[in-house]
Length: 88
Image 1 (cartoon, helix red, strand yellow):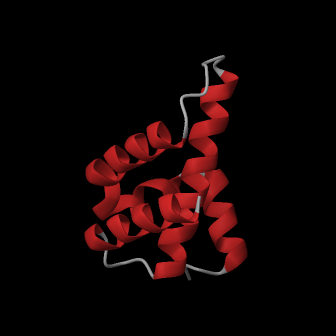
Image 2: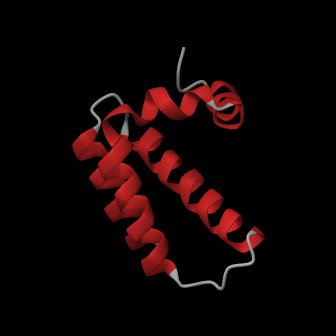
């Protein structure tokens, strides 16, 4: 799992210089968990970590440079990051 997170974190950092390593890693872990939970709730058969990595890679390519802006509008993420005091 570490390798997946590490690759995705580095990919995100390449596209977004507003995030620290820890913030980028946190986004990856949160997005990974959300994707897999949503997929399972939809009744979809689990297709493995490679599929999750592929989807998150696409999200990073599409939204990576603005991820810190877009997802903080979502209350679930905003509250978590405010709680952790990443953003002031």
